[in-house]
Length: 208
Image (tube, rainbow, N blue to C red; front, top):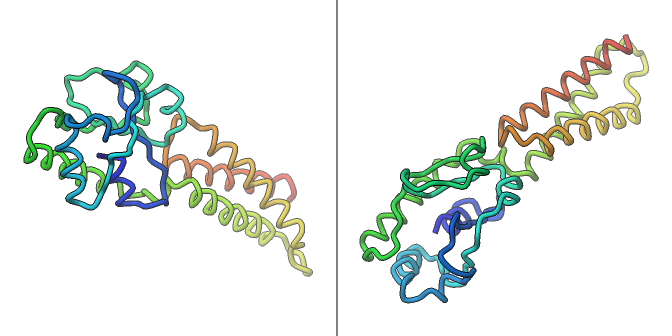
């Protein structure tokens, strides 16, 4: 339910994938699990979502490593895998399991999850990798141009040099952004931008 509601809320701007921490059987589509999933399919249909073809799958450590954020929709008493429970990416939502419950209860669970999905909105655009990379490109160009602003050159900054410096700042900060696993979202982006500013400042000191 959460994956479908997330996609409905944010569209293609962000990637989403759902998985179970402990599957009770083989990977199957939700539709194949009828009649046990009838209530879930019905309440999702009420909001215009057909999840009958959605595949339930097992969560893996690699999936956690690849994600910017992991939301565990699970009751507090339920344990989590060790590789997930200690992750800085983990956000835990205490939501009851609708399995075996009636339509009204399942509808209530859907509504709770939908409200929680809306709370992901703040800074959500900065969790989009495409938008974050665009922001890094723009800030790299600004830092490069600002670097030459402080030099008293009557001919002005050389466009080729500014471009090369911007590319250097961009790729260095991109490396920090992509391989920093301890931070996520806006914090990761801000760290990469800080690296750009520090590099530009260091280059200015070296060249002046």
